[in-house]
Length: 367
Ligand SMILES: Cc1cc2nc3c(=O)[nH]c(=O)nc-3n(C[C@H](O)[C@H](O)[C@H](O)COP(=O)(O)O)c2cc1C
Image 1: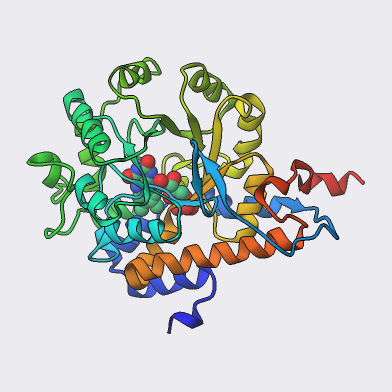
Image 2: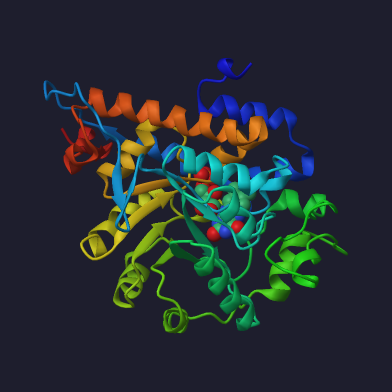
């Protein structure tokens, strides 16, 4: 069965056929009319690869270094909430797959497995913790302390989310988390406040009630005042914000439009990448997520200046297929596709990828 699924699109199709409506719509949706959702993928085709020839690619190595640590492939797992709707082992299975593949797993604040459960499931893998900041700042402080204690290596502060975007299917479905699941990092209302809704998306109601909408850049200093972990800022789409973040001393920027789930009409993340690389690429590491579904997407992002890319939905499709094994299959598919891209463009290692190997399509119409 698994062997007939040979690309991310195949796993997506499979997930669409097996996931319950409530969960599938939550995972799949983008904000509003979902123009950016489609564009996140299509925009990769606006960049063209200029392969180089005869450069001895007999021995190839796709590993790289991120925040000082070696990763076997430049493809990690982005934080996505509530993964136990896709598979009973949810985040634990996803983290184990990342560990097995020698890459990074980012755990969401609003996960259905706790920080400690994930640390125990994948003790040797590199794990980062994604932060949403609650009105009650003590909540955030405690999460950070727990992540540090459990051996997480970085904090990924999501900055594009004063509110959750309007995802129409979730409003129609009155999305709530099934009663056997909860937000596992919390107790009381913060854990189970997502299990009911009076009207509209239960998730939006939860977030509007509990997340801090007054966050400002200075709050990064607050975070830095009590943690030594490197901070990755996730959700930046402009050079302006990238410069502010770099000036504040963050370690890295994850260029992202949140999988097109926040506001429809933003550029695809691959379109936003070049201006951010140009603005701060010499000061902080830069990563990208959004619409990555093929090894050539990874190659293009790396050529445009990203050190690493991350996958959101593709890992969920892998989970829905067969838990840890399914996510490994997804990562292996992308690894193989990247290996082909490296070989056929004349790159034995990631360092051999040159900026001029990927150009916007306008490059050719000018000729
Ligand atoms: C179902 C789902 C849940 C998500 N939950 C979170 C989250 O809890 N925290 C966060 O920072 N980003 C979250 N994101 C955004 C992802 O981290 C990532 O930016 C996005 O999925 C990348 O796009 P892709 O799905 O096309 O790979 C979520 C995305 C999806 C699809």
